[in-house]
Length: 285
Image 1 (cartoon, rainbow, N blue to C red):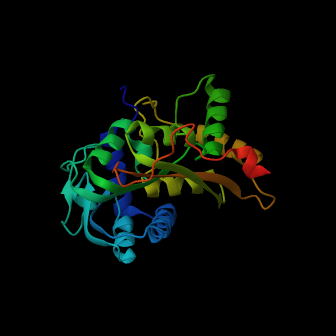
Image 2 (cartoon, rainbow, N blue to C red; image 1 turned 45 degrees about the horizontal axis):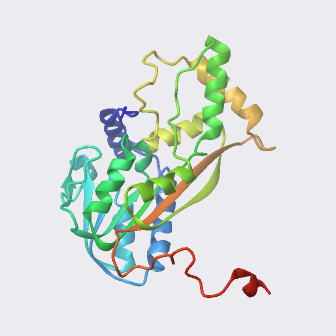
Image 3 (cartoon, rainbow, N blue to C red; image 1 turned 45 degrees about the vertical axis):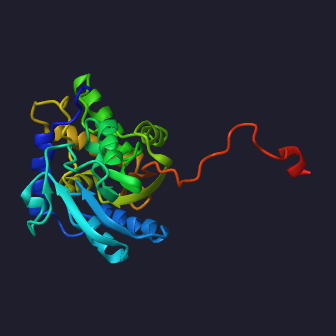
């Protein structure tokens, strides 16, 4: 599979964000952790051993602890700087250092959008789960930063006659559900939540993205220094196309949630075609 992301650059930007993040810039992670808690509250069972993988911060770990449904929590990260308590496992990018059928719950928050081999990593999660183990993940979906992508593309095209990719591609909700099935999860579900955040201007939005460690790490990115003129032009287009009457601009953040279970004979299964005992026509009458 042709890689899309520079994994070393991704790591460097995440570590920089941890060191210097602006207060409140983790609002997306806070929101994802709250959603994780809500989703766990609907699951009527306990989990002996859970893994929070490649979440960068401890938001997922704290949500699992607060749920009261997990006996042991293991964090998996790429760098010791992401594990300040020195508790957890270190791993290379996109490698889950777990034995097959060794965990009951796997969680990942806001990292799968920056994976080169998403089908392969999903398969690793499913393999690591015990039968009837649960996988929950949230990551950026297809509409994320659609306004910024459009404005940067238009600005660079106007100024240079061409454009380099500057915003990463994000997975569509339909593709996400298909990937769960491909990885062998039972009872797969994919849903999407979208939030619109308002900023004073494009530069305030980009400052938040830097604080999240979410600026572009595409391998195909241009290596040429970006001129301030490009961003000034993009800011002008953004304000013209996506501003509210008060002058503040809108930015879309779309979060795809995935849930799936490691297959187990005890799980519900769809009936075979033709096995119904009564026709739909009779029910509708």
